[in-house]
Length: 435
Image 1 (spheres, rainbow, N blue to C red):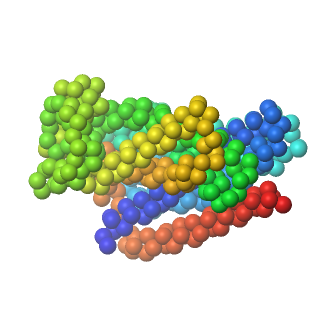
Image 2 (image 1 turned 30 degrees about the horizontal axis):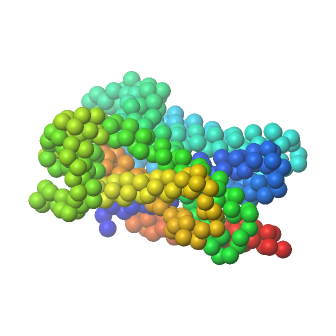
Image 3 (image 1 turned 180 degrees about the vertical axis):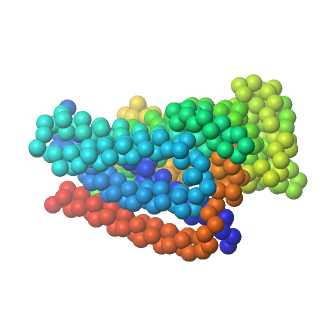
């Protein structure tokens, strides 16, 4: 395996693994805070138990996420030293802010975990909110740094030198708002559906306890509302990409030929040799409208992108289709959920409905991974868009394949540890409610 491919695979595995825990850290604290708020309002013991149980899950994911995040920071410097040498002084501010948010989150989580009966209920609830807010801010700061790689700002690149550095302009680049907004709602949708799915599985196993029923309701509310917001934030992101990164949009839609009234492609298999998409469903003018708000607008195709600057079309296109397809499925499930609540149907005891939720447990995170594939692979061959190529940022250190194998081993162990810890947590809940 070439060093460049090994390094990119290592970053892909690390980022793909860490992003799940980062998103859980953004959304899960709000679920536990909402459960505590319900307890403060109703004094119903089940909500208090739910808040305590979810807080233990948050602590587990927080600890493991801290490990994977630390590994990522080291990998950036070790694998891409040229990139960090030049980019570090420019986009270092959001990483510094992310570190601050991380420590605030850690302190607030400590108060929440160990502050039961030691501080007032209101102060305790506020500490839970701080955990959630700082988690969201941490995610936004990291996404701002990634957005800078897609939309470089805050410096002048003259004669191979980076001058006139403005960290504020770098952090608030043209892509940060759309990426951060879309990512935040994606975190809530994926986490909400995953939590709902776990509790649906427990109900299907005959554990007809009210704990899981109330947990299912709360998780679906958060997940469904976030899923409804995804098309709005996704549309804003797509329009932004069409303006700033036409090559990425062309790869997402496998749009080979520049044209007006460009069709929106659903499905299909891109064929780079024939420059066509086989077996696709086309909606005339759909891409022009989504990209520019005009059915007759011209959309730049891959034919206007130099061959050495084109992203891998097949990977980006399939990832984009998976993301959109699963996002649509989450919206559909959310719509059915609210419809059943409106009609006052007994959806909690409906086995078919619970099976659907159980099967939907991973779809949010699969969509999340697909979305990040679109973002990162769609930017290639650039590590800093139109400024620095990925291959030029690679370390000269040999033996990257061995560090790749080490990372795979570390994350495999961490995965087993998380599975064991969460299984023990769920088992303890079952034993408590069935004694």
